Image (cartoon, rainbow, N blue to C red; front, side, top):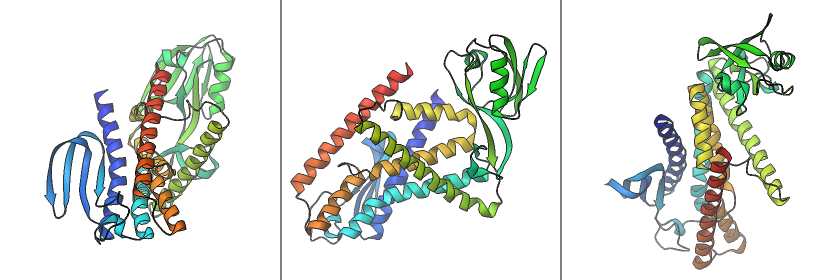
Length: 358
């Protein structure tokens, strides 16, 4: 459990620091003064001054922050102040965090592909580009025959045996058909777990729909020449971003139609559960998960809610349209209210995460 928590903290830190580093680099390149770059969140432990920026190391290791000079001002005569620059310059600084999260996802996806990233071999996207295909457990129902037998997500099912019947699994349908035909009977399951073969025993339930209580998929590793790895990394980045956008659009549709979205969104507890569940599946799976989370963070930050980068960009769009900035009092109240709403939403999502897992 402790190692899971450490990995979870490292994952969050990498995602948030990449985002904040984007703002930091963009501000520096545009000549805007960065007063502080914080590793973790206050209270402060220690720090040092280098040039005009103070680098602080803080107690809560869940990311970081950047304090840019004049970021909350409406106007300024100081050329090193954020507010003294035009709309385009300020928009580029605000967008840089999102851009760096996308770049991070691309780098991680490309690296994961280089060491053998697992994908669904049944996806037409990977047709002819997958090696080492195997029927793999991707979900286990609670209190099922599979859970009782000791199956875990990531196990490769090699064969099934019941009475005198035996089948070597070559596809997902083999598992379904064999378990349905032997519902209610004891079976033996030959698995490959991280390269180690083992035989587990289970008693199938009488349920004809899912006697074993697992969901399986034909999982393999992307097999492409080294010189195509960056292209596949780019492909995965855009594909994930597109599917994530579709997922968010679906969630908003559900919200506006009055449907519950409790099972479709996750807070820190849910993310920890996902990260923890992927650790035993190998480095490439963890890396691809971090890339997906990085893209999620980028898209969430673009939502035009005050308190997020998207909210600041919305105010810049209003400023560009009306020819003058929104008043400091109005923008300050809006961003404070937006931040408070985000905190409340985080608390609600965390509560639902905990309730879902009890």
